[in-house]
Length: 219
Image (cartoon, rainbow, N blue to C red; front, side, top):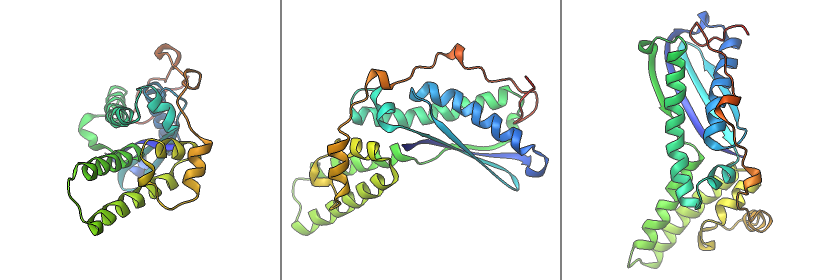
């Protein structure tokens, strides 16, 4: 599992005037509706509400290799998943407004830096290193150390399956000295299969409309 996307909202609403349980359920269902479609799988949505003028964090957790499997190559898949997170933010924001939120009450709406962003940063660092013509041994060792540290940190935050999938996408030279990573690679040499990818037709997902900000109507 991986943190596929994260959304941060800041609303000009009083935390104490919001029915918190209703708001959490509504936001979870709304985000899940679009995340499942975008990432081609059953995602898990975590909702956090903070006091003051209402702040909302929505975390989308799912399987990295299934999400990437929709796009072909690992690198292009990572790029598309980052774009998908931006699309998810736009869709959720638009739906909140359509369902009763005053657009002027949305102080901020932004995408969080998540696992696909972290992976892309490592891939770009590898590209930059490999494009350099002349490096001293100390310079090379320094760059390799930074990349390997990033790879270790990313793998530690992923499930074993996704860590193995990520590690197989880069050369072994960039793996840290970690016995677990070769184990993950050997055990989880994964390519997303069609039967792993769940398709959710839009008509099959029914999220109830709301008539108040961040609340559901009764069924």
